[in-house]
Length: 366
Image (cartoon, rainbow, N blue to C red; front, side, top):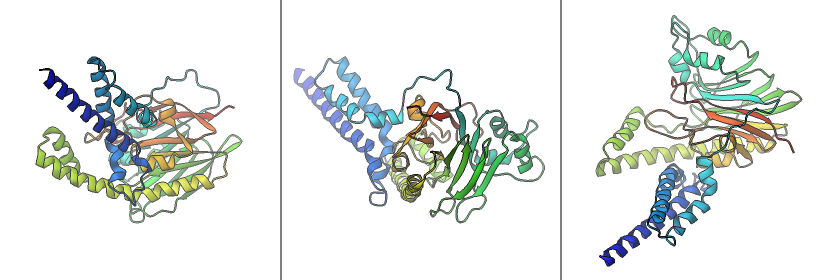
């Protein structure tokens, strides 16, 4: 029996070492250029799985009083601390807020849930009007005409507290995909960033806030090209994980995710270039990145920025709410001379396939 017990301990230890190796590989995968390693660059999607497994091993060794074996998962946690904090930060809320902060809200509105308008109006538009945000950055913006449809006049009336706004078409083939910015501060200019995409894009604004002029970049980066059937297959795999079904489904999903990662890479590079060349007083980058915090996209854009959710949010901050894809893919990044407070992914409204993300932003004091 003693030999059997020793064999099981060795087996568990070997599995733990493998878990630590895979945890480190997923944590550092954002450094891989998708053009050279399209599949490996998607490893970050598996980061929470190996982080959870590593945590379970740590608890197991402590319960078994195997202190030396516990060093392996502990080392894994320490080596991946930055990624763990990026993925699931823990911060206390700030109350009261410092004077002079502005509230920015970013939201993929999914065409206002199909531009539907009921007897109480449109739920997403009502939410925006009541948000008390100073700047609204919206993705998948669309309006329509006709009875029971949300028109541009409806939006302008509901958001009349925002005297400045810009609506820009993005993508080379789909003028219906638009980004919008509604602001209580003057928008001095707006232009789309120059990178190839059929349906997605980024718009850079210069916004006058007091004595400062900020660069604000609103983004809807390349989607993962998953069809309704693909998402259904993923859900089916979770419900019934049969070996052949999982193997076929995983191969197809990884292929599509790698293709999308390859397309997002130059988009992230273009945003990072825009940030480097900016000579304005500060910068804010927000929107639907279609990528997690552990990704080349996030790593590249956030290289010289702070992630508002990491520095002032709490928890996983899951921002996509359909098909059991539980990830934070909507982000707010700010330049180092700014500071974020109480960044929140708001789960109180579910009319879009994304949740809105908002935070308060102020100047960082020396």
